[in-house]
Image (cartoon, rainbow, N blue to C red):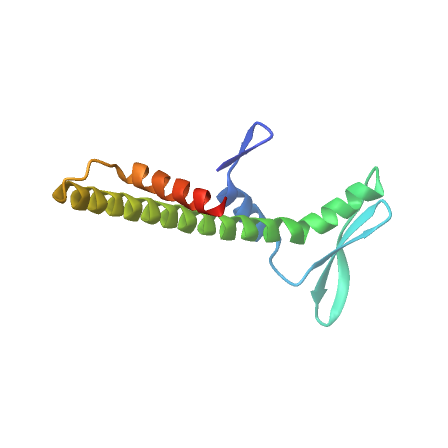
Length: 133
């Protein structure tokens, strides 16, 4: 579920609407202000739906949305899966960094060092920048 322009969308419900409407080999066409749906049966294409709209842009939108909306929902699903994986990767990296920081702290404590990891890194980069000058 995602907010879009202040309203909530239910992607699963949108997908169900698309799946119910896209069965079969039909084709949507826009011709000027007319939108038509052709179906294929017994070797012939025949019009199953015909509608006149206010603008040719509206007719084209309806014709294109028939295939465009399912494609957009497929892409949303792919991006959500990628987002989940990236969040796991970030979590793993943060966990690893915390473990390394803990190990460095233990090593420093074992050797009676009073510097924190951050101070060591800052000193390192200060020395690097001094060397560049």
